Amino acid sequence: MYYRWIREYKLRRKLGPYERYRNFRKALIRDCRIPYKLRKMISLRSYKNKLTRKSLTRLKTRCLITGRARSTLSLFKLSRIQFRTCACNKQLCGVRLSSW
Image 1 (tube, one colour):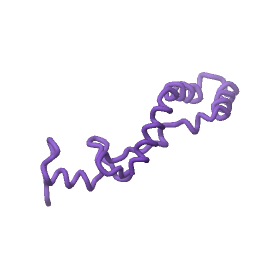
Image 2: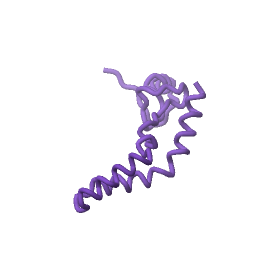
Image 3: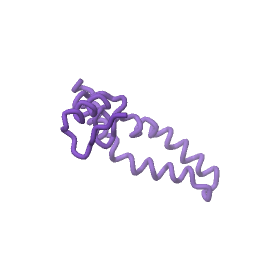
Image 4: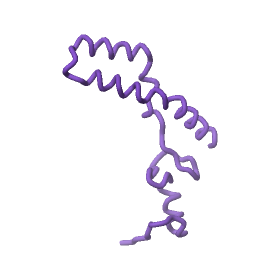
């Protein structure tokens, strides 16, 4: 389970410097004021540089306790299962139990 955290941490550190560059390229490609040929050249060049593999969307938010990648609440960084157990044990500040 810990190897997933380590892999995600390494990937986040590796992709961090490229994010500003990717956003700049994406803005240039989407800008309609730039001629079409120039936008096409920028998009082909970014594809050749393999910027598609260096994207932050490949990362997943994981639960801090279990490492579960699915159904993670981003505010608490906990999975729904751990969130419920922590809320029942009153370990989370500002969370109330409700039943209907």
